[in-house]
Image 1: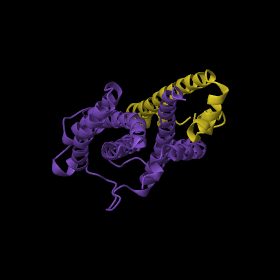
Image 2: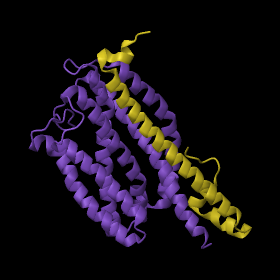
Image 3: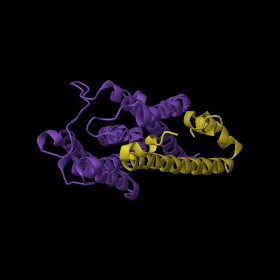
Image 4: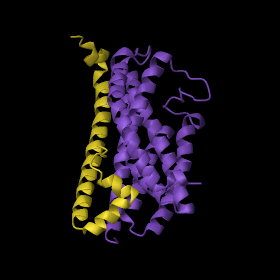
Length: 235
Length: 76
């Protein structure tokens, strides 16, 4: 059932895809920057500040996506004791944390010219800040708790609360009256962003995803080598 | 040179600082990850050097260890 999660198969497969990622990554980032900073139109109300959207929105999506994946893997590891799930979530956590930080800071920078303030304690902003703390809690739990069983229990509890927070992040703009606007891009519903802005946004998302894949591969390789180094003593 | 790409109608400071912050965080994460990978790989190779020929032979039979020891496969 979890053959794909077999460490050996996964490691070999990831090494194969890394080359292709490296080839695509640089051109995609250059194209998305040209689109985001030069070719895409400015907003009729927000003017050029709308360009911040091209880094803020993909970062937020990645931060949320990473946390969902991490929570799923932590729970999977807690129930089935799959070692690879543990290695994957350890490799994903710093990526999610970085993008969560980027999302909060760029959102704050965007807030000053549009709302007149860098920060407001509204539901969306606060729940994103809480998400950042959940990321930190998970990272500290597996770094500083030496007993792996206890650490995975703690991580499972944190991820369950984190999932509740994810739900709050997603629906905060619908449940409460917030400074933050409601979602403009919907996969299953109507998207209110014009195609001329949606295209650079998609390119930037692709660029960020490729970057995440690259970092993930390096982190995953680091974790595997660390594990194998411990095993050398048993040879 | 079209200076408006820098000034962005007065919003340049906000736009550029958001982009620079993003790429700075990404660069720091990349360099930190690369550094720790290099260190771990170096340590692993040093540990392997200490092994006997028989142990290295056994190690190379293993799928993952073979991939790690293969110098052509480097994710950097």
